[in-house]
Amino acid sequence: MSWWGAVALAAALLLGPATSGMAMPEDAVIPVEQYSTAKAKNLAVTYRAQLLQFSDHVYHCLPWLGVVKDGIGFRQPRGADSDDRYLSVWISIDQSDDGRFGKLSQERRVSAMFSRYGVDMLRRMTQQLPGITSDADVSGFSVVLSWPKPAITGSDKALVTETLALFVDKTSLGDFFAKRLPASEFIRRATFNVFEGKDLVGRVPLDVWEDNFNSTFKLKNYELEKGKKC
Image 1 (tube, rainbow, N blue to C red):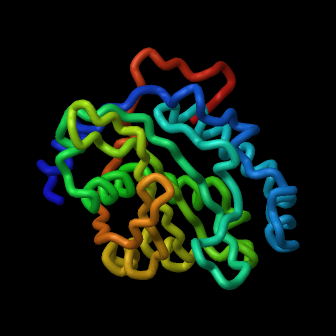
Image 2: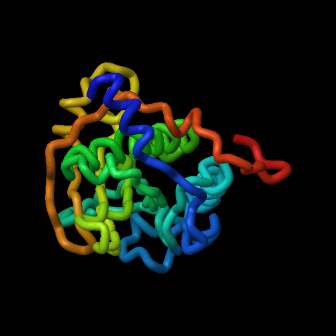
């Protein structure tokens, strides 16, 4: 995407604060009892404190995003036939559309959301949770992004969400952030699917470009809680 195209897209994604339906930090972490394997339960117990800290970070430092209930934990890709575990964060993006976002193709909407929010969230996880990054029982990292599907007509309310669920191994992610791996190869190695509501769309063409929105955006009239640092 060209620089001008990215600027136009940025103007089309108008965000408000996370909705009240999103989880509080302590409710965003998957409870240990929800896991079905010894490996997953051990990871959940070992890293619960760190996951709670990360959930608190997203809640206070990125208030325009919301982590869904039980949205942070050690998940598997859809259809996995082995107990490979990826640290995953499921984010809900509450946005209004001035018309331009809805006119994009689905693959461009997915690319825009991943470039803006997915890449940043993956980077934050690797930077703030180094113990998980080095744990041999963690295969990689995952980000799940959900947002309202743009309405087709003025009377068609966007009641359906579009969701991207992406999983990538630690080596590929590290090489991508170190600029040793081009975006095209990073996407080729990643496992991901797109959904409309609960319906599987599957893998779509996905582009990745630089977008520093999450690190530069300031929510109007938002004051960080005393004692919190971002």
